[in-house]
Amino acid sequence: MVKFCVIYQGRPEDPEKFDQYYWNQHLPIIARWPNVRHISVSRCRLLNEGIYMIAEFCFDNFEDLEQAIASPERREAADDRLKFPTFYGTIRHQILEIKAYPISQ
Image (spheres, rainbow, N blue to C red):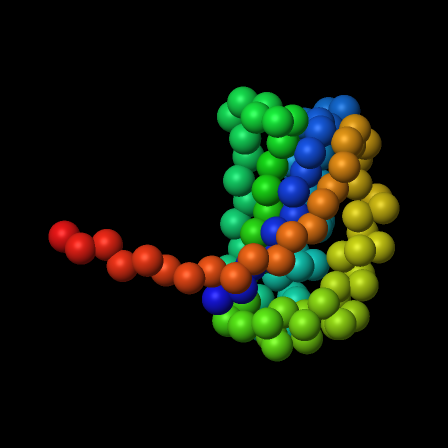
């Protein structure tokens, strides 16, 4: 499995407005990306190193992720980011390969 992570380091001017826009406008665009298997958004309870939230978009493999990144839906999401309510900070992207470790009971 592969994760495309978006790390929001900083803070929104109006957290409620930002979160509503993100959930109701931005995530529906990402949900239309080809091959996306799972979407999760983690909000930080404390501003650990200034991180506001991390969004994770999961794919079965790198090829599926590459198709999504090259898609019109990805371009639409990039354009939509310009419409976000004011966010003070940086928005970074990270691609992670996931390997599960089995836990014995």
